[in-house]
Length: 393
Ligand code: NAP
Ligand code: ZN
Image 1 (cartoon, rainbow, N blue to C red):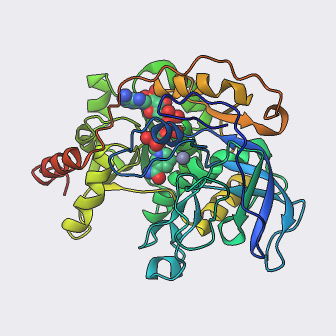
Image 2: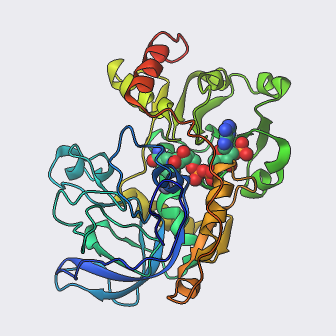
Image 3: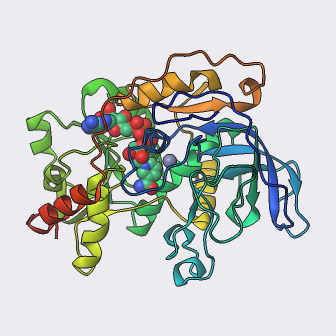
């Protein structure tokens, strides 16, 4: 399922995967989660900072079954449950890659979609120049970028762990969240709900900060201890100075500095949503010698992805998902663009619904104006704002 331009009108397309190499794994796709990043990419929200190519096939929460392994593949066999997350290659030679942090590759990792085959393990086929993601029947991936899904873990739940899960797990684990820690999860959508569950499994007390009371029930179902409505002044004042770590998953540009008041004196807010604030936070922290109390985080390593799927299996952590036919993609994009009212993670039922005879006649999604401000100018303005803000460092 691909789209031809930034209207995100998904249609059935016939595109090609590269032939299998000795170190490749072939995957029969079963499910793919739909991340808000798919919408940002397809709708061109990242156009100021990233190359764009259409047709685009997003999807970086892949789950399927191994159907073939190259002669040099280790760790995977035909019949295994397998996942692929946000990257399919990196240089594997820089100091970050060698330390097992491929997601921080100094030469930039290769995205599962819209990535360039710079290091030779992410070749594409046909006329396509950039990688094609998981809204597809078949995937070919280098074995070093594949994740073994425990057999006991439901495959339809596993895709969301590959991006949403690891994106939350990585900062929780990096910042040493454990029993006694106080964690705030800001925005209860696909990432947020995984964040609540994983932080609870690590022993933290979790506060969900949401725009309305609508998701209180979901928050409590995920295991949250406290629920704060961000538009309620009294509730925000009540939560002042209580949180060691806030994971901010709000997808559009907003006043994130206002949430600093909820932190303890050494607390840190991590921006995860793809907007100018995330880019500014990325530059601010190194500029102040790593002392910024507004930081960013991006996905996680292959090791962390394997750790988090194992953790989810061990603690029976399951995301709240809605399995939908691929013909509903346009409707899903409309829902994600309007704040994901139910907080669910939509998961495409590839195995049962991605067939040559499907009819893709749904109207294009309703997508509002781009509020992410991801241009070089807006990022510099944001950085200047942060440097002069006394609550950030
Ligand atoms: P999602 O399912 O659409 O959920 C986002 C949640 O944020 C919504 O459910 C809503 O929660 C809240 N929200 C939405 N619009 C808002 C607004 N204008 N103001 C305040 N709150 C708002 O999205 P997702 O898949 O979790 O992704 C969240 C963000 O993380 C996206 O920007 C995505 O691209 C990014 N992301 C980043 C990384 C990374 O590596 N840094 C990885 C994956 C995704 P409430 O109803 O509770 O307020
Ligand atoms: Zn994602």
